[in-house]
Length: 103
Image: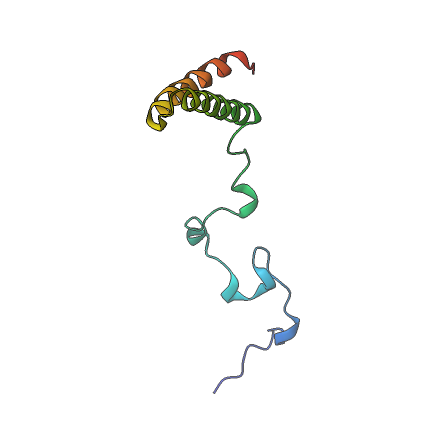
């Protein structure tokens, strides 16, 4: 039997290799496999889902839709009719608010 490599360092004193957590060879990731992993959490969302302008336009259009639907329901008492009046009003308000609120 041959003796283990004499220039190897003892188990607890190995210095970490660059790019490997803790220096343990089983914890290293092969560069080709790293391409299959999802990106790091800090780089997933750099931009918000909605801008402040888009959120304001949508919230105000919901208020317009609710106001038109509510007034139509109070005047007619018909729920389906009030929805048919409120939804197009809300859609039109999105277009109008998009033009009114500047970038």
